Image (tube, rainbow, N blue to C red; front, side, top):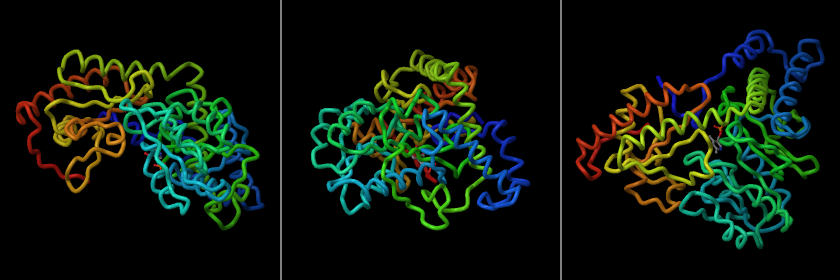
Length: 386
Ligand SMILES: Cc1ncc(COP(=O)(O)O)c(C=O)c1O
């Protein structure tokens, strides 16, 4: 299968698996123990903490390991809620559901900051929404469109109002250069499976000196900031994946990602009419291509592409067997027809240029086939969503 769905998850790197195996097989000692095997596990965790901190430009004490992006986000918003002044949580309208559902559940309430038609935060509207807010959460880059948000400006504006900022960097980390001090964020969420690490492990950056309240209470692991016996193999895997990403960033693998995505998009748009690139092309993750195909139902395309051996995602949300515009597309004002005809292709550095070209050919074929079947308009295609 050709995996063009890196924003959903990435393959585990061979080096990461190798590093994890001894901890899965023999390294079962509880890192909180006092004997030699337990101390070795503790050391391995601290090594991983150093690796993640190094990648982010943070210090190890600022890194808290979690069970993934969702837990990191929930912890961040929980803690901000505990320590922020009154006023709703100010979050962008295109946040991942982890942020949106958590913020909605807070008694303080939620205020949505709109985005422009290109999927970027409307900074003027954001500035207008800051007054009276309690804290801010704006994602670094969007998971559907790949659009990179003006986070530096957001942090500067929030700081002027004395508000703390969390960013969900689950999609951005590893695809664009990110350093926490340059950004000026207070909290940042990460997930290992988005950068060739294992699933079920993530991290939360907590700026030194920021008041913090844990979400998970219990045995007091992670310096009391996240209780629960540490997932040693997962954390070791995350550390190695982060270290590889950090090394690759030095040789600009972001450019390699851009080359793959651009080769795919250029071939497709050169050879096929009626293709729209969604989102701000000047501020996009280098790996993400969110495209609408005139006269095609995305659900039908997904089936044809699956048959051709390509794994990608619908750009819209599947609800009750029908494609509906996602909240991101709604926030961007993308009409229903264009939303229902959109697909997201997302590359990782484990993809090849050959794959990018082959995928463009297969997508072109699938679109042409579907257009023939469906005629000029979007026809009824029966699909079953899982
Ligand atoms: C932007 C964003 N935030 C959070 C998450 C949740 O991360 P996890 O799958 O590790 O819980 C995802 C996962 O797709 C995501 O894309």
